Image 1 (tube, rainbow, N blue to C red):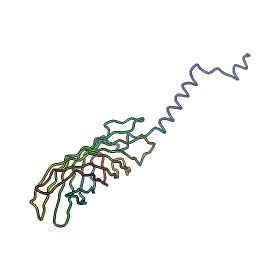
Image 2 (image 1 turned 180 degrees about the horizontal axis):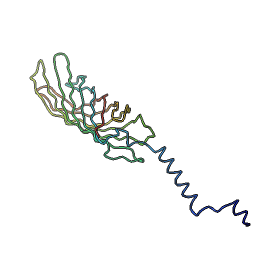
Image 3 (image 1 turned 45 degrees about the vertical axis):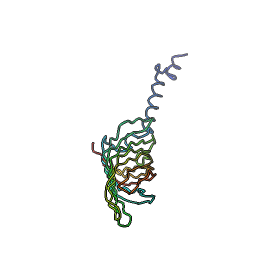
Image 4 (image 1 turned 90 degrees about the horizontal axis):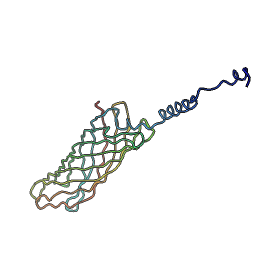
Length: 206
C-alpha cells in the first residue's frame, strides 16, 4: 500500500466500530423501552378514591348496591422493563344495599395487588388485579331482628389506568369475587359469586 492509499483509506482504531454499535443499540433501547415505571404514577405512593358498584345475595335474592372505596397504594413494589410493574393497595370499602324496607350495609378492609405488563405506552396502562377482603355486614330487617356478621371475599379481575398528568390518573376496573357472610339471626347468607366494579381517580404523593 502506498502512502497515498493510506491517506485515502485510513485505519480505524481497534474496537471503534464495536463501540459505535453498542452506543446506537443503547440509544434505541432507551427510546423504545417499556415505560412501566410510570404505569401507576410517577410517584412511589398514591391515594385513590373510587365509586364502587357490587351486589350481595341474601336468602337466594340478589341485592345490588353502591358505595365508595378509598385506598392507599404502594406504586413501585417491583418494577422492571422485562417483567412490568407490581403495585399493592390497602384500602376500605363501604356499600349500601336495599330490598324493599330491608337495609344492608357492607364495610370492609382489603389488600389489592396489581400487575401492569411491559407495554410501550406513556398514557394508557392495562392491569391485572387480585383482591382479599375482610368484610362485615350490618342488616336492618322488617320481619327479622337486626344484626351483623363477619365475612370475607377473594378474587381477581382487570382494569385500565389513563394518565392525565404527572400525578393524576383515571382508574377503572372490575373483579369477580367469591364472597361469604355468616348468618344474621334467622337471615341466611350462603356463599355466592359476585362482582365489584369501580371507577375513580388516583393521585401520586411523592
